[in-house]
Image (cartoon, rainbow, N blue to C red; front, side, top):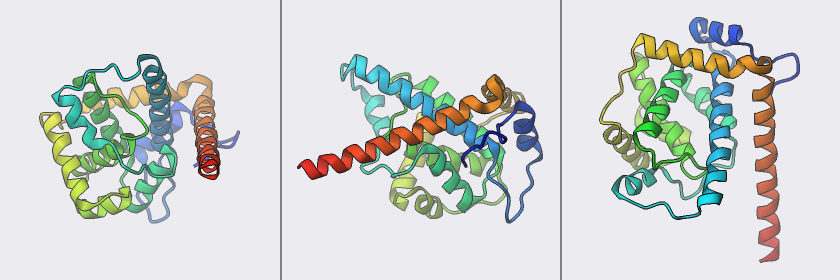
Length: 224
């Protein structure tokens, strides 16, 4: 969902969407998806900058090897925004699911400092945390096989990602009301600067980067 100049997200709009979202057949994409996409995209850019500075000097200990289960052999040819929109379109998971998924990602990264979100693992991490959050929040859920199809992976891979994630998190899946509210407030602060235009700019930059990567890939194939 691209933003036009008159569709900037405000903290008030986001809060209303988080707490008063209407589940209908033709429901619009929840605003939280765009905010979450912006946060993830910025993490990717920051981590890529760190990797360029540090190189491959990070020690590969046991937990580092385990978290590499989230690495995809073939990453989906779509932006984080498009990937999250696809998940919503086929699962209809409400805004609270994405807030809980964001809390899980934050806990995961805090518990495993050696893990960094990259272009290779972000899609696997997102589909896993959203599926687990959906099971935690929603009364009715799709099977793992369905989430696997939505995420572009096999059912076996989806089952493995879920199990590895749960064990790496020590099954700390509970999110109480105060914690949920704190993450909602954090997302609101994310859009408070410039009335949401910063998010629009970040997503536009992500689209441009993806476009340049595709062009470079095509040139490389021609050269080879």
